[in-house]
Figure 1 (cartoon, rainbow, N blue to C red):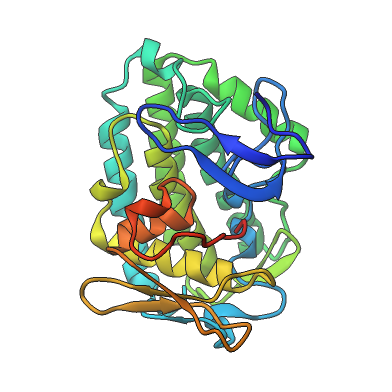
Figure 2 (figure 1 turned 135 degrees about the horizontal axis):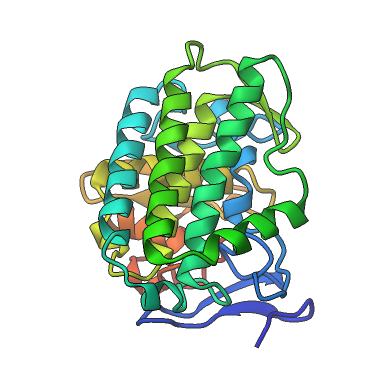
Length: 304
């Protein structure tokens, strides 16, 4: 049943994944674009990489959010290493997927694995286009139109397994080569109407690869995330959530004592939620239920 504007979205369980419920209307959390079958969902987190730096400058970049994760420019060496790790892990799993399994459902309702893989590949191409435009002194949109994006996903999803794997590999490699051409990672790029340092695109791409790898439902879970990848993406997620006017006041605590907090909006103070960084990320992303972490009962996390 497709979400409607009058009821909260419900992303159904697939392969043992918990149902995901959120309070915004008509949105399946994490839906990268209109469902290729024709049902349009409002843009989810995967389409908002360009908002890594909010227009108001809140979050890590303005001090409203406290995290044990540095911003994208300061963390660039770690981010690029983590992106290579996450991409390597993704490609190591996707090479084992059969043609039949590519046509099966992913963890995102209404999306096959092939469609989601095509989205991951086209996202790499889109980010590369933005960067190459900036290097030429031009503003290039991430996607020309919503229709062009959806058409590209459909085209990519119609390939056999080997072609899908080659597409994922080639698009990721081309983006990595483009990253290698950047000398000034503070260079501003226009990304979804906001000027951000180009380093933010690397961090956004890391989140895209890491979480959608799990969304492919090919065996990887949040417990399989490389610890460094989990920490970096968690810090990014906390910044995104902390920039929202309806963000809950949270104090996220890892077993080793690291903390990530969003600002308190009243005198009640933050709600403490405890788990390892990967589990915290899975909960914030709406992929894991509240009982996967400690202290999250009743907490509503806004779309980020």
